[in-house]
Amino acid sequence: MAVPETMTRNRPDVRPDMRPDVGRFVSDAWRDRYYEACDAVYALGASPVAETDVETSFGTTHVYRYEPADPAARDRTPVVLVHGAGSCSAMWYPNTPALSADRPVYALDTPGDPGRSTQREAIHQPERAAQWLDEALAGLGLDRVHLVGTSYGGWLVLNQAHRRPGRLASVTLLDPGGLEKVGLRFFAWIFVSLFATFAPKALRPRLAAWLEQPVLVVPELRRMVHAGVRAYRIRRPAPLPLSDEELSTIRTPLYLVLGRRSLLVHPQRQAERVPRLVPGARVEILSRTGHGPQIDHAEEVNGRMLGFMDAVDAVDG
Image 1 (tube, rainbow, N blue to C red):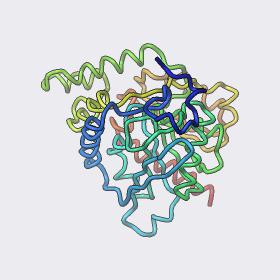
Image 2 (tube, rainbow, N blue to C red):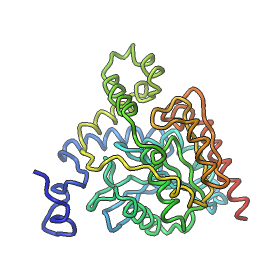
Image 3 (cartoon, helix red, strand yellow):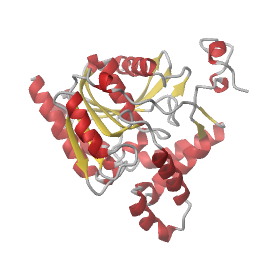
């Protein structure tokens, strides 16, 4: 039986794994197995120079830090990456080499997802989500950042631009949540894609192309997804989209990248809507991709993101 939130919130005698709104690993053994799979995916990208834990009101946020080899580039406005639901910051492996060659990069494990963060309080409510992210940035000593999010992480970034934009130089949204209510077609795609990961190896490339799912052809990513589904229980509802009124409050420079075949949003609809509501917003729809443009077309998306950030920095002077 679920324990009512009002009976558990802020009570030290109630463990986080008893909370109905706090994510958890099913066991230490599965946690360790998931971490091992994650480390194999991290190894595909840039090597972090440091890992750190930041304490917030909602739990401990684990952060990976990457730095450019060029000392002069280390003073540039940093990038902060916020991953999608059911994953961790290992998913940024196609992006960390290019981004961290240009400027410092911080990749956060979101509390409530199966990374190395520890959740103690719910953050799915918009104001609490914004407070968590602001506290995490403050704990890292970051006063100005280029914030990048994908999928559920895109909702977190969009919500931040609406509610607590003070630390944001820009926001980049990669096929994000927060623009439309999550529909049945997206959940069906997730289910079919997960089922396809168990297909014979010979069929996976064809299924990957049909489903727009690179997880099927990257063995390390496939193992991480399998382990995450078994190892972790997410305890939050799908976020509600921002209204037109809420979007119209955003004044942070915004770059929206959508996959033409996205099943999370209707790309053309949002390409027309977002610039109408957010002054100066840049929107691009990439063909030959669906929900993961930063993985499917990493080189292209990395270049476009860095070009956008350079333009914002040039205006900021």
